[in-house]
Amino acid sequence: MSNGKQAYLCFALTNVLIFFFSSITEEYEKELGRLSSRLTWIMLASLGISKEDVKWPGPKGDNQEAHVLQLNSYPACPHPDRAMGLVPHTDSTLVSIIHQSKICGLQVFQEGTGWFRVPPVPGAMVVNVGDLMHILSNGSYVSVLHRVLVNQTQHRLSVVYNYGPPDNVPISPIPKLLSASHPALYPPVTNWSEYVDTKAKLKGKALASLRLYEPLTKLIVLFRRSE
Image (cartoon, rainbow, N blue to C red):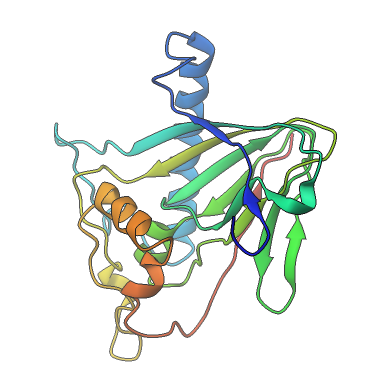
């Protein structure tokens, strides 16, 4: 119990569990991997960054980005004002792609405005900028603070595809984005796994604790794919 609110039940299942042998899930992961990679490079290209500027060699010498497929279940809650589906947090990823059921619950925080709903849109997905993209872009893309509220009468489901770099490579601001007037805002992060562990220990404050300077500009981007 904290500040009168209690974390509500949320099941997070990776692809090694229930849907491990499902061809549908495997195909979904494959397609979301392609989409995540494409979105990542589009975002970096908007900053003048090409694949030649960022090299993530996998164990076989190729680019093998890592991912986690997460299935979330939020049962109906009789007292939604006394519970929280998922507490405010940022994702420890490059990008996260969210497919929502028809029940609204996702909220995003915007400075100067506060929390606003991200309602489900048929044929669309939500893309969150994660902490590693925040670091890689040297603060040009800001990781999205978001939360999930539970519904009083309806059960909500979501599928989250968390996309990151190969787990064995360090992440730091891209040198091409740095200059005397725009120094590195963050030191190198050893790898994705270590960052997740650090974030868990610091209760989600890892990014803030790493920051060396305040960024000059901020971009909060929400992508939606429409049919």
